[in-house]
Length: 347
Ligand code: SF4
Image 1 (cartoon, helix red, strand yellow):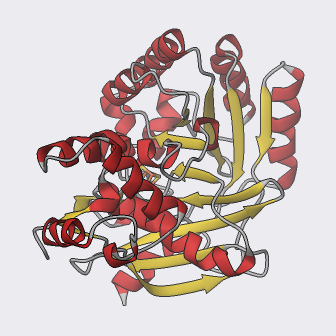
Image 2 (image 1 turned 45 degrees about the vertical axis):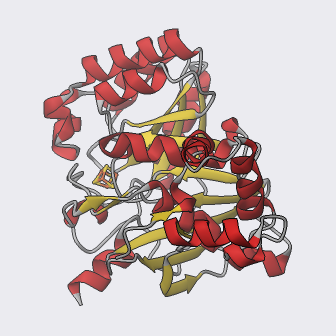
């Protein structure tokens, strides 16, 4: 791997600092950002309003490296799932989901994941390392390249793929700032979501960033005894601590939180869980995203029946809690998070 800096990993502020160190004016950073994200060039030689001599300086210090597409799966419903190869050979998954309102990319933040959620194929493969910001940005830019001939581009980014984003906090922040910057990808803060399994210090820090970017909590159970069976992180940060952090986040940011709830038959879809879920969310004005479980062969969990999913949905709405049932994507491909990489690694 080269020891040059991959420019795709720098937030605008970081690039401004770098330019100042090179004796340049701050505006140079905006000019570079514009070439990278507005004009989508991937070579310094194409930056025609920058002098040839300064382009040589840039080439000596920086690269513009994107991951390579290792495997591509396309679903009939427009979902595209990529296994991308990073510069050091590690592979990560990226998924594009096409909604009526735009194109949403689910970005991975780590190679593997140490959270060990029992329902998750990604958690089967332990964390090797966190991704740097350029490797996360690379996932979005590769999807944009695929969408360009269709005259579409990424409109929403969710950091919800493999990895725990708050386990790789600084890189994730640089990445989302570049995505959000009006000189970068210019994707509105409300179209960006970071999802955590419940890392309390990360939630508290994130709330103080002063960003309008969404926060999602992978809740998946409203009772400690059930959540302990699904998510080992609940031993470190039990529900009362996670909810106290959510309340503090709301006080600091005034932003509502989305709670993700994968529905698993006879485990977290009982009447007792439904009542506890309502009691937990109602005072917090949260939003609940119900997700019918995507079965994988690596475990015995089964998906809740449609009746149960709708029963939860109706009861939440009746209690005055906003809720949706997540649309299913890519059921004809390796749709579950981490499944594609898990299959590759097992091979
Ligand atoms: S669900 Fe997310 S946090 Fe949990 S193991 Fe999978 S990738 Fe990690």
